[in-house]
View (cartoon, rainbow, N blue to C red):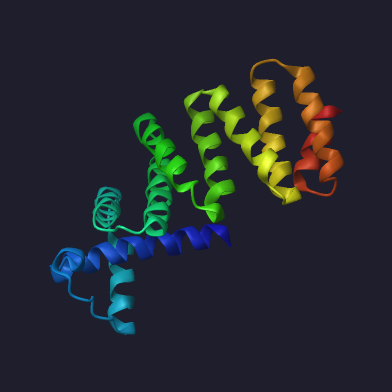
Length: 193
């Protein structure tokens, strides 16, 4: 469900950018109201999104970000661009994704997801301090037991990567107490023996 929402958000942002580029009108600068697209035109834009290369998608999202002024659109497009860069997976792309996720985290609906993505990027980059900070943010702010369990599991793994077994065991034990029936609790029990 969340993956589909991310794809839809990314496609929407890119389609909006393509629409601006395709019709050659910057409504923000011209002051005119944008025309409403028909269902057929929207479908055609989404088909174009599927055919774009990584660099074309990146340019389209960046163009959208440059031409939008609303904070909600900025946060969502920062998230979409961060996801695209994270999927690219190079050190440079992951490094660029982190501040975009930080920007997107200002939107309450995106906060937990962005913190988890920051932790994933930081993990790949070998930055355990940032992994722990992001996951601790999720643990302290999330009201969803499964999301907290996911963050706790990731935090325990971070401790294991740095041979801090006691801290890892403490985190896994806490995880089992708050979310005993999750997949993360199963993994925690495995590690604890």
